[in-house]
Length: 456
Image 1 (cartoon, rainbow, N blue to C red):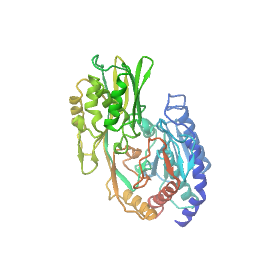
Image 2: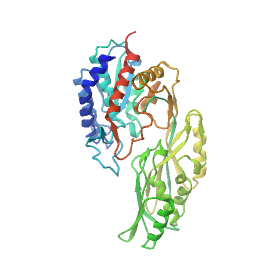
Image 3: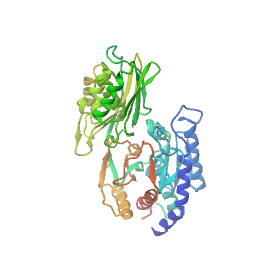
Image 4: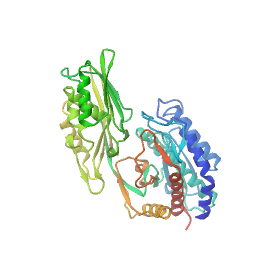
């Protein structure tokens, strides 16, 4: 392994410059164009990745702009060791100190949207693969890195990939944390809609959120009210200890609430601004469906207000996020993103949800089963060994609420790149990656490739 480690050290500056280049592309999904099913920016991003892989000497394939891959070695496609990464990002959002597409380095941390989710991990996996290639390690199977372009919005990229090509059976997705995540919760996504009440405080316009799997950090609504609500808003702010402002906006009042942005799967590390504003509006006198949401969805992120709070010892608690809300004088629309423990009866859960939101029409948009790979499998044990050899840290398996490409493999797990104790930075303002940890992740991935793909 010393030769591979030395090669990686030589490649470290290239890793950093590559990540800066990739971060410069605002690769949020947009309207489809020819040969760009997820928009022009993702076409640019996929081309960057595949062109770089070509220059490294890998065999590459563009799968109609939905995805692409680079590989080395020989063997059957289904037996390849797969590393699944994604090039799409969530919108940059509010509250950034640094340019979200600047790749600025401060105190050995690179800032930018995608540094942790998932361009940083993609770069680490790619350069680990390059180091193994440069070291001339003989392989018993193909090693393939697959670049997806729609992970954040439904994974249509991998559905298409599986229809067009043979998906490898086994591998990992570096899109979460170490040591090894061998359990991913199930997911239920719903859209809810209702007509607003004509009684109480009237919300004229409210539009927050772009993605259902993002916890919004700021939210504001325009309401029919005058200066008389300003003292009341101040009282509410002091009561809850929240940052809330009320200010005139033409003949209306704008109420703005700040929270802490984050990922829907990790509500303990964020504060949902939509939920906070629902509670504020209820205190100011809103009625009907918005009050119902304030009394149920907004009270907690674990489903207790909706009577759907469940947990199991295998995978933990259910989480629930209201990620998008749209309100005008004729309609209320919102999305809920629930991450369900492995043993949950998802159909029963949906029936209880409907019972507790009787004013709303509820349309299910997502139903994904949980994913589980036994801890004693060769895949998990090899990855744990690679992690332990580099870090000296305990070999442990974990469960998460996040959904990664690991579910696209029969035997897939999430592996890196956040380390134990790291703060959750995905989907947040000032997302960053520690460059030393990025390099150590590449070292771990290189060892994993050797353990799982080297000739005996």
